[in-house]
Image (cartoon, rainbow, N blue to C red; front, side, top):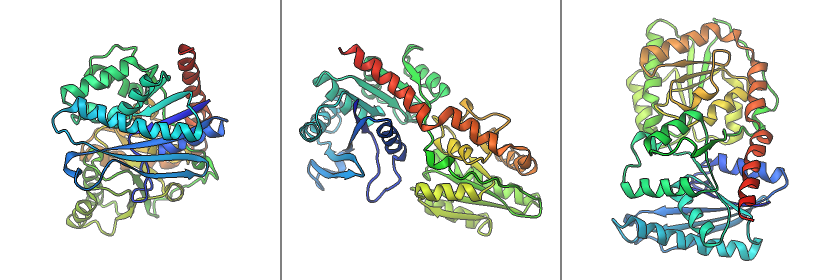
Length: 390
């Protein structure tokens, strides 16, 4: 098959780890023998319209993965449907450049309606191509997508795609309820773990005299609730438990604020900020930590959690939705999102850490989320969609 992937966010020179999952999925499909290309469209606001014109800002062959990128400047404020149509038409021009060089794809797979999914849906309809959408955005649930025209656009795409994929059962239930969609709208296909995280499993034990290292890794955004995590570390140390360290991977708008908060809590000797990490660096941190901790308000799935399990590291996580698909008493601890509850869950992890079977954590994760398994599930949906268009 020839698959064209249209993600709503993707890596760039300035943000090299953004959208890593989309690239890993593309390469898993390539490893299975499929031809894959990427068009990454960026929808820019009216406020930037005088800075740039519509243009292909990049094209490169990324180790056999042809990748186009384009910025579209929105020039019609408050006229969403027209602005979205112009955006999609602009991306379609890039699609035709892609076809001239690589041939017509058998199928378009877009990730998230806003905004790659809108363009992918338009192009697929205009060129009679099978179309699949995977939704990842928490904004439907957390209140970031509320405009009626946006909701109508999303519902139209979800209802008319050849397959609408969602990444967890909890997210499926929530988005169908919020958008008043039939329970049959979405098919759950979990995210995959890159093979990198299963390599060279390191079994790590803990004795109470050494430092227990928690690791977390995400964009530093409000919904990730890092302040709750930092407050929990303070709560733990206030109990006289000082053999604890938190290593925070990731960059984002809250970076400086969180560093200041660590100073305010007098935790500079307990917390390390690592900045944005490459995939190899994430793997290294997981190999050297004892447990991964996630304090999010809401997660559609939590790829970082299955990466941790692949490395044999048990989880402490807030009850944030998506993780409920796979976190259980044998591989982690789920906590309510309050300081005392999360802190006590972390203390319990320190006390019971050596009871977790790290080999089993990794093997169970492989059986559920390995690249080949998830790729096969996606491929089956592709074949069904293509067959519908014959």
